[in-house]
Amino acid sequence: MTDAPRVVIADDQALVRTGFSMILTADGIDVVAEAADGEQAVAAVERTRPHLVLMDIRMPGLDGLEATRRILSGTIPDPPRVLILTTYDLDRYVYAALTAGASGFLLKDVTPEHLVAAVRLARSGDALLAPAITRRLVERFVTQDTATAALHRDLAVLTPRERQVLQCLGTGLSNAELASRFTLSEATVKTHVARILSKLRLRDRAQAVVVAYETGLVTPGGDPR
Image (cartoon, rainbow, N blue to C red; front, side, top):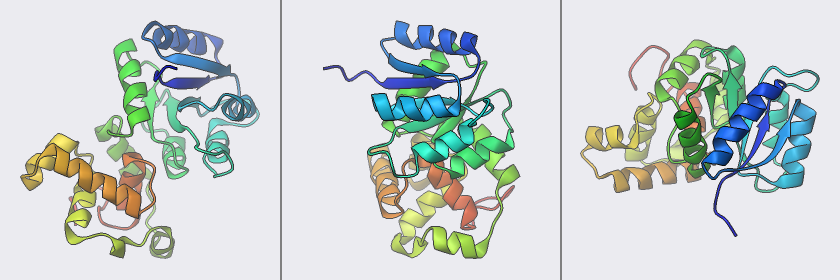
């Protein structure tokens, strides 16, 4: 029994799938399936139950965005995390994927070392991938709808300190930066983050960033309120 991450790679370009598969396999990560479109990706997830899907957005037929929605809709028990693959760091579809539950994104020209590290981090859920880029992306495409935000998450369940942590987390701060900001240990910060995710029923920090913007705790282009 291995604890190696189990990964599905979904991309319509065979060269991308092969290259990523070789890089991950060489580092002990188990690539359990490859998919050339969204339908194949959903089927592969149902069949292999991976920890993580590397999902291209722009694929023929069922695209990666809809495939992500289906995988994370709640119909698949213990669904995997989804990392979006894109050639553009400000692709509006990436934000849509984050709101659908994706855990982050990677540019396709990622270095082998970064790819491996991203897969391992995404499985753990301990860190938001490319926080500066993700924040820039959220700031550009987030739409604040008060009614939707109120329905989306009730922040009243958070303590005052947890709200402060969520505000700063929404700006893309790492655990170390949060610890420095609040003069806390990283272990204490991790506990606060874990409680925030649990209370708001969030899968990971990527979703927490989206919620911070959608509820107005952080405003596009501004500091935490």
